[in-house]
Length: 110
Image 1: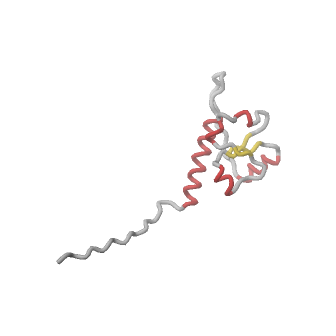
Image 2: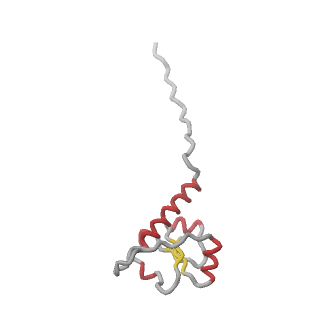
Image 3: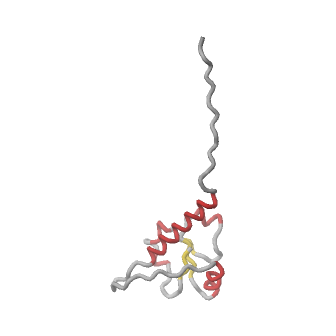
């Protein structure tokens, strides 16, 4: 007589972090990478200076004062939400599109 084998029920595992937390973590990683890329030492050998982190309210004020808002996220993230008037240059394309970033304005990177 043979035993009847019943398949085990799969138990759904709870994700390590909620989806929104992964998105926030990804945004932080992108922001840090963008800051590193944008602050390479000049050809003169001067050391790079990292800009300060600012609040959303401070960024909005800087935009009103004429700052260039650079969003380095991916298009799918941009489509979910973005700042009106911002310019999208995904981080992977930034090095080849640096000419699009003005040198005569303050740049706020998202």
